[in-house]
Image 1 (cartoon, rainbow, N blue to C red):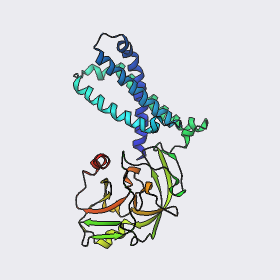
Image 2: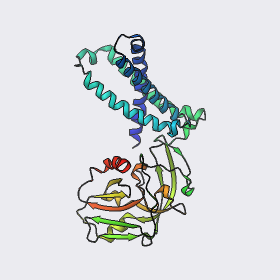
Image 3: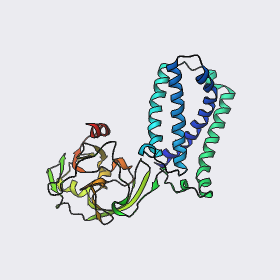
Image 4: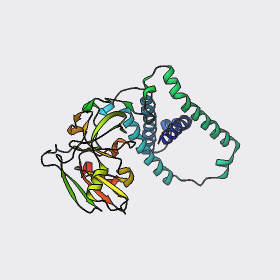
Length: 315
């Protein structure tokens, strides 16, 4: 949702301001302190990671298009942010101190927090107008931070996969799409039987930092659910890939999804999930399951589906 992105941006600016204040206080101790070498090294490493995380985020939002080690600045921002989140959580547990009332209720603390919040919100509100005024590339970002790439150009848009997913090419002649679970009739549908009669225009927005709007053609998932006789009591549908990766959707949302075989007039390429990929309007790219081989109708949500991001890549 857009509000989540807005909160992320404003909080990011606020944290960046806090980091500047914090580094001014602790940097002399890190460089000239008498603490153990390993603690100093950890502190310096954390400080560099913080600077790297914020630098990557701000440069990406400004339209700087570089890819250190083959990864976009947005990917570096995400990765460093995840590492720092874990490190901060551990630090808070190991070095926990009891909060005192004066730590939160003092006049100085209140004014500092209020000023910091005001500066962060103001900077967030001014960012896009300033980028537009200066004709910076960052002004063309979608609200998610992604940049447009290859819209309505068929398979020419960028291809990404979750971590290390790289399956062998699927033979179209032997391909079968299984529909099972809470259904009256299990199905095993060949590619030829998947009549590509439905079309929709939808935007794939990848967390890697690009978005692409395409005209997708395939079959509505609702057609297959009706054909299989989905249990009226079923509430969830899991869409699975040949890699083992899968994602779960509420059944009403699932009925609006498309199993695509073509993109803007061209058959899907292997990199883009051929022979069949999921098109999930409004969902992020990692939910658009590629190389779809099975559909499971369920009464309960598939709570372990997010864990498949691990074993599909390294299992």
